[in-house]
Length: 501
Image 1 (cartoon, one colour):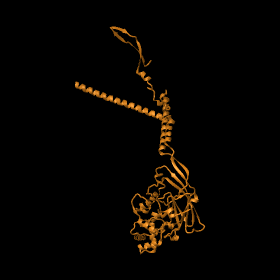
Image 2 (cartoon, one colour):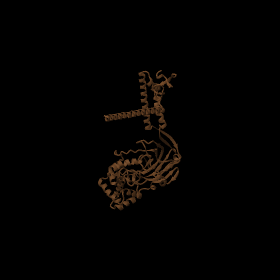
Image 3 (cartoon, one colour):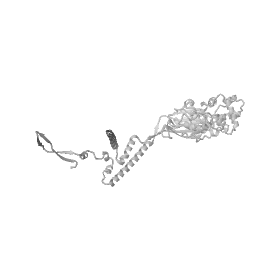
């Protein structure tokens, strides 16, 4: 048999000079060939080759055509498995999401921020205001006092002072001289606050009565607070915590308002023709959209439906740095595009952080460019800031019903009633559709579908490759060491031979 040889051996022993033959015994010698054959797994392929579908056929097929065929099939399956795995990984990185919508009932729901403004920012107590002007500027005429007031209101950045567009430059310069005398000793912001505090309208001047849920409330201490609104002037905004606790009309907010004076509007009989209402989710800053107009002796019924949106943070879609809409960004964009960049100044009363430090605008600068700066109200393309809303924010749908009253209101001129239809809101939440266990399951399913691989097969392949590489590296190191030793030995022999000679 190959690999086996039977050798007859004999042993001779000498005792007292006598040779004696011993019994012959057969002995089996295992050669190197037999060792390799009997070594389990010596020439067998690694065990994981049986787990990789099609690999055993590619290795042990008897004809070259079948080997090529199976290797081609395996290659196609590897490409398909790798491609689908990469797609699964990319999809997981991008984070596929879904949106869930639920209706949540509540016993109390906070009303949105409701801001009420007179249409024209000239609601002042005229007699003491003009007396103050006369004291500072004795030579001023009655007509010039009205024009100076228009000059100051429009130059402060408020709308509806269209008469300024008819003044020529020399007259604007004269009004500017009057203003400097009138405001002597004050900064622009100090003068703005002083005039409004001394001669402007107060909360008591505007509101006649407020009701919330059928109960009368103090409008000025419980419901509203003062707020300066861009291009509108002094307004009043509902406070935080004004909640509706009963459904629809029973829990509604009722606001009855008086008609304020408008000292520069002779065409309206020196009375405010309209009140403007803004509804927003931001209690810190008020943008001038969307807006609703209220008219005298008109019934106004405003209804809200609320949605709370909670999104996952995505670039240029939403941010977690703020809650709600970024109202400060909209005001800053308007301020930069219409005022800061063209005229290198700002309106300090807006309390908006801007990227560059500039001085307060003089009324002359704004009044001389009133149409472009204030009345036009456009965004300059130079401002590249994107107003990204918060990922968590309230969104309100507003409907307004208006109708004329059968007879004029008594003791007040404007009416506003606002409420939710139901004490509920729509909760919209964005969630990831792929979890870590789901991701692992999808990854395993790709190669399992195409090649029948599992995680244990990958571990076996990895260990086999590491073991194979380690053996090759050790053999290479051993070969290099022997090669170096042989070179050193040859060098030593040459040196010894040279010395011997």
